[in-house]
Image: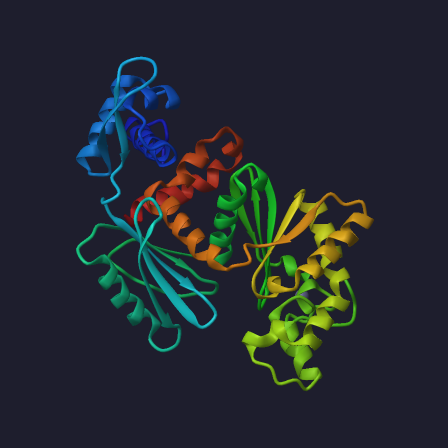
Length: 362
Ligand SMILES: [Zn+2]
């Protein structure tokens, strides 16, 4: 996308207006003009076109302590929906949400059998005549899903990170590493509003003795993955289902003995990636709070500033995060606005390509 072309500039200004109204419902045209630094005539044109497209509506007069009353504007909450599928361990949760992120409908089905067909019929139930901005699938691993609506499939860690962002605020999240401890270990680095997936982060060597499934000796994944726990259960001749892994006391004892592996990894990662928060996600992150305190104690001993903590423990966060991610992606298209912020000028190249690709798809 060439941002200096007038129709593109106009498109971006439309997105800016939508994002401003997402944060501050009830702003008037003058407020928008002042806040966004766009002249009143242009703002009026943009607002009129958004009203015509039924994305924004006038909400009546707003009286101020100073100046004339103004006509407040707001997102038209009836304008359409986004659909989200979140892949949990054995089930898929499908939800439809309005553009404020409120959940309108929820369905759950098992992830076995013909999953695409189940999803397709769920989509038609949830859509039922409504305008659908897009379908967001939060899932690790590959899948193909075709629909008449735009579809994006992204790793679950993005939704988890999005929900944390909501919980602790953007600024705090400035330099955070999300470390996913599941079947594999992977990372998501967030810095200055950009996100970077680090798939092989679990394979640096820390403590000799155990091997990961890639054949490395002593990497984080050899200790802190569900795969490693299953291997340990086998060695101990324990019969334990995948769901119960984190409840089995011998396996918890195994993790406890090896907490130093996780603290060393955290220390190294914080130095290499220059992060001050590490948020654990994934199955193994349900380890007892005492373990986390212990790790933070070890980090303290090393004089490290980095602090480690668990992702939103209720697990509800991921679904909410997926809904917000879906809105960011399809409706507010925040990545286009982010790409223009001064801090991310360096990453413009990649965003540019992504933008182009998306334009062709639509
Ligand atoms: Zn490894």
